[in-house]
Image (cartoon, rainbow, N blue to C red; front, side, top):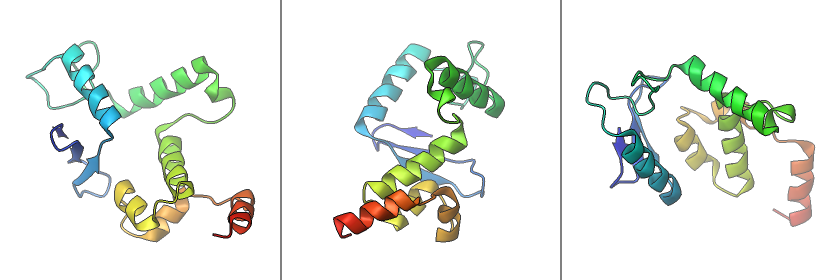
Length: 135
């Protein structure tokens, strides 16, 4: 569910079966408003992202499109481009920005910190930076 006034998504169908609220940035809210104006209201479906024939995008289509555009842009030659990589990068970038792990855990929808640890590899260079900054 897209809740534009609340600037959030309410994801009903999750991997663990628990619905959760995901906040949106103001910029992403604006992009979604524009997307919905261009796409229009499709009464036959509750899905947000549709094909040109108004059918829901499948998981495979999303994975394929990310890989395709990653290769086309040249990014795919340097790193893997996939939904999983996006999640892992999101978590690591939030940690590097100083967001506390409990908030990241809530944003990611993980039930405990062990799951979050699987997503975030802390490399030795990150540890070197922490020592230098005195954090």
